[in-house]
Amino acid sequence: MAMDNLTIQNHLRTLAGVGQLGQRPELDIVGSGEIQPLGTAEEPAGPSFKAMLTESIGKVNDLMNESDHAIDDLASGKAGNTSNNVHHAMIGLQKADISFRMLLEARNKVMNAYNEVMRMTT
Image 1 (cartoon, rainbow, N blue to C red):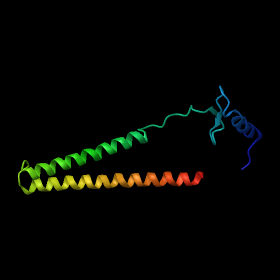
Image 2 (image 1 turned 135 degrees about the horizontal axis):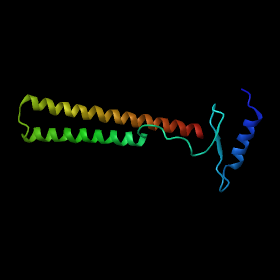
Image 3 (image 1 turned 30 degrees about the vertical axis):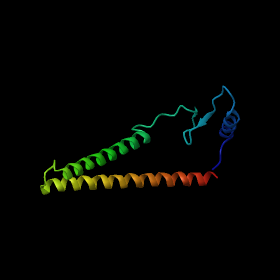
Image 4 (image 1 turned 135 degrees about the vertical axis):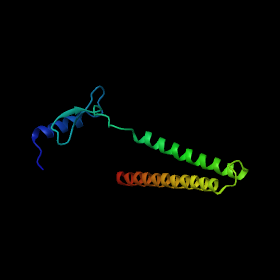
């Protein structure tokens, strides 16, 4: 893929300006042919990864707390000894368990990706 002289000069100017005080290097958006200052990219639509992760952890925590309360109520006799209450407690416990396992696997995938990136940079 051949690059024209203007593009090469723009890249050289960008590299020369990096690290100098008071100057903001420009970034050539690949394939667009336009030059934009760094830091002017549009924010992606939708919630951030941090917000989604925080919400997921909160939901798993709520499910675990609900299952703990259901088990405590069942053990103390507050829920009664009907089979319906036992079923609800067991279903709540399984929901919490599956949600926690899913969160743990997501964490493992993120850690594996991080470790892979760190291996690539060394």
